[in-house]
Length: 71
Image 1 (cartoon, rainbow, N blue to C red):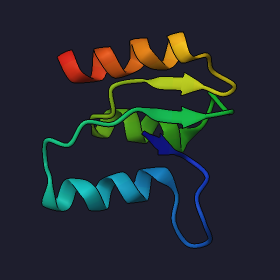
Image 2: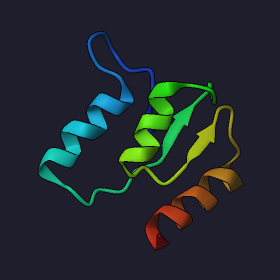
Image 3: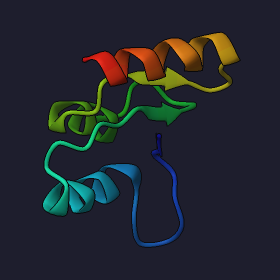
Image 4: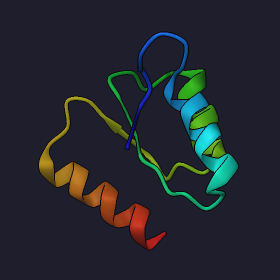
């Protein structure tokens, strides 16, 4: 799970790019309160399976994890 807002100097997309550098097939789910972000779009284009918008329910999160693991 990647939150798009991380500490100073890095965001979720940048972190995912770094992870893909040493684990090219790493799966990920984007978690954010925002849905209209260029950074989210770029992260999904890199291969993250989907966006789960905050606040989310356990059911929504479970479905996202299932989709990420199966897809």
